[in-house]
Length: 291
Ligand SMILES: Cc1cc2nc3c(=O)[nH]c(=O)nc-3n(C[C@H](O)[C@H](O)[C@H](O)COP(=O)(O)OP(=O)(O)OC[C@H]3O[C@@H](n4cnc5c(N)ncnc54)[C@H](O)[C@@H]3O)c2cc1C
Image (cartoon, rainbow, N blue to C red; front, side):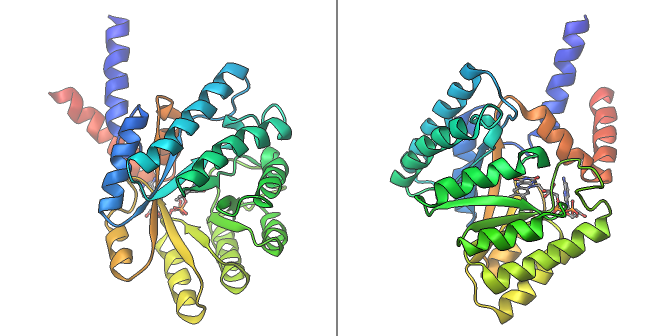
């Protein structure tokens, strides 16, 4: 009985999670990525999971990404992938992570796909930047995410831009302490705008990754003044009404598409980002139990 109930609960949660993830398998992600391309967006595919330390798990993840980047070409998908450093060995060593990522990037180059490095919690920031700079010397189609909620990010951004780095600017998804992070929404937003301005002044080929209309409007107004190659990036299933409008206005949009069986922590993160999502979850749970 108990296992029947937990299967039902899992099915219910998976139905909710499906708005943010492509499905359990790589094929689900490739198919969804094709749909995103048809809608005029580039696709950035991510295999869910992080903080991996077992050798087998890391090797499996690297093999899966290798298969994924090869498939991008076969499926004629425009875009690339995004990898979390701790999926490919950062929890063990910078060296392991660089070696593993390099294998993936080599393959991605063949299919002319772009590789993004996600930024995880602040304990990994220094090492992630080290990994990025080590690889960016050799591979141009490589970008790194930076988080506006961290106080250090302005310094990191300026230093990375001196190397010509390709930056994805996000607000930051990890809980951080007030010693190293801005805690109020106002502070994070103000810093996001400040960093966006730096990108328009000194960056090129960067990504404004947010669903926040205020941040997007700020970037579109800067785009009128500064001719820069940049794109907006948004997650699958969020602000779907806005994406076609931005495309219509001539902006490039990439959609970040996660997949994999490890969908629960990712979906909880998305749920927490918006109070209304929790209410929606509650009401659809009630509805699903009425039938
Ligand atoms: C392409 C992409 C890549 C990312 N990569 C990273 C990364 O590498 N590292 C990292 O720490 N974080 C990453 N993030 C997550 C990011 O840090 C934020 O946690 C997330 O984007 C929410 O912040 P926001 O900028 O949308 O602004 P918010 O202030 O959270 O939201 C602004 C508005 O957007 C809408 N919105 C936001 N979230 C939702 C939601 N879940 N459901 C419905 N509406 C919503 C609402 O209208 C909300 O008022 C990434 C985000 C994107 C879009």
